[in-house]
Length: 199
Image (cartoon, rainbow, N blue to C red; front, side):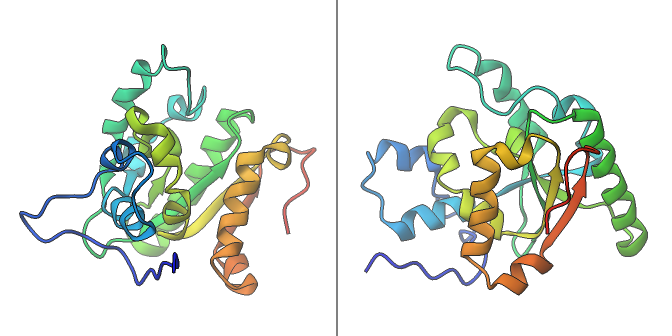
């Protein structure tokens, strides 16, 4: 009881209602694990590299309720994933680290990906892939967001090892996969000379 088996992305049939994380919030916490899982999978989003910019890596992903309206529009930078699509990279980073250095590492990854695959990658970035209108419930879907991505891109700056949320992202990755599989799924870049590479 309470166990959830995830066999892959779940998408509703054409015309069927899409489970909403906002609906789960209104359910007052009574949603079952399977309902939460299905809603999280149906609301998976990603951002195309073409829409990424340095400005998106600046500031932070979460603000006070009075400021949240300024971030709502950022949700439009992302899109819902297509049936059978897998997001290429989950971006794990600290908003306290250098935005320019992080963006340049992402550019390196994107260009390398293009040379090898003939297309630019997609990313899961909290700032644009989380619905600011139901922030708390969106964050509950973190395990689904992490595991729905092919790779976890770790941008390790000086503050990264000190941030609880960064540790939680990595814990999630290793909790849902064998150690060797989790390690294989990580791509780590050190963006600060004073920060030792993870590994």
